[in-house]
Length: 117
Image (tube, rainbow, N blue to C red):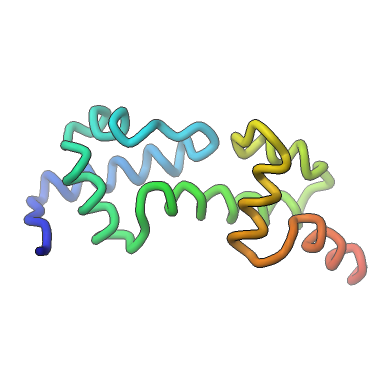
């Protein structure tokens, strides 16, 4: 059943997206995010998924992974430094998430760049 969304609801969903883009390193939990934008959790989750094609968690993950790729390809930061910069408590968690998202380890991205130079 499609969720009924008012213009006000959509503004709130967009506001939630903006908060997540801003704070993807340490995103608010869904209950907190829902309170921040003034919409209930169920509606927020449903409208977010319907609007952006991703769950809140998937959206945050995508932001982090896109930023990770950017940092890997444009800086000399170590894998651990990148992991911490993206809000991961453990570099291994970051490596695991990166591998799940891109299908290879962050180090192989860095290594393939080094071979091109």
